[in-house]
Image (cartoon, rainbow, N blue to C red; front, side, top):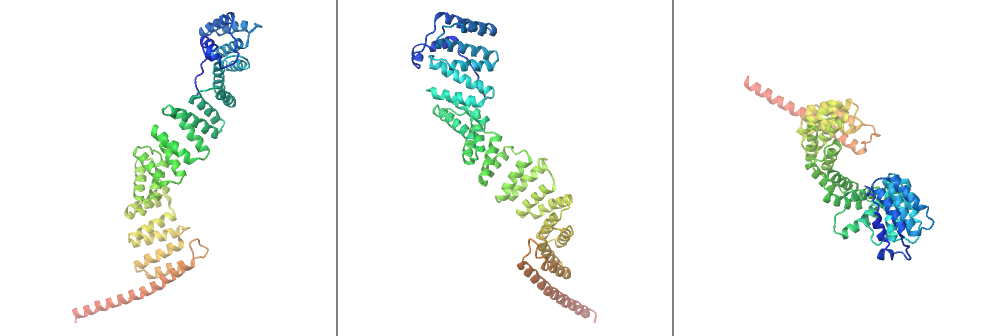
Length: 436
């Protein structure tokens, strides 16, 4: 935002010279009648938009050898106003700078000129000059304004002087607080941006809360949630994200997946699954292997294994990935669907599973044990117990457990054979009795 430049009408400038205004500068010069008439003529031409004539009139005045400091200041002020109105900011700047070189003219005129220069410098992207002239203005004025501090904050912002931006805006905010009025939205937006650049997340958090209270928009709500995330305040981040979800602000895949992840890690996996599923339903979240796998993890964490099955099967079909088949197998295992689990474990191993290989052989052995396929079970446990020690999941304890399962399987095989034998004897005995 840039403040609109305005030049003082001649009459107001003339009034600056009298009484109280004149006392701000010792020995302020006076304005004689002939000079006043020429300035008035130039002012009339300016009002009519006849800039060329206004300049001609002022050029006549400039040739006068007897002008005092105040008259010269008034003349350069008029030059500045004409050039500014004509759109020649370079000449306007030069005129106002020449005004400041004069002596014995009122404080009010100097203040207006300094502020006008600051605005022109800002308009022409000369931010260092803007800051300099505003500093001169602050040193001279008895009543600094919030607009002046904001103008300086903008110049500092473009120069990436973010600490100065914060200082300027805090001064502006102090003024509006004293006036009991709410701050401008753009001030707070710039303030939180500079605080972000300075890495002051805690301070930024307070400003974002203030902004959200005054201007409840999607962007500010999401920025607040993001700042909570930076500060590792996930419960607060989740609360804001859930509120944004209810307001339909989470309209992209990354935003929905962020909410789902927060729900998942904060112990609400089923709610996370619902967010992802809804995203699939309205085509906001892509139905790809990664997202399907995340949905299945949410459902599995919520102990919803039946619901996880079709999701995992779809993911496995699309990706043909060994890790996905492993998860599918463990889900079948949880549901006691032993043959399907055995098939999926075998498929995961056939597809060169890179993780959990020892555990997969262990689970496959236990699955075969449930199916009473003892030879396959023993073979699986042997694979687990002799797995290469350089495997990331391999350790001596795992080898011992695998060996124990192998022994247990051999015992179960013998027990099962004995029970089958005894059962067969009973059947034979019953048949003998029935057919003597």
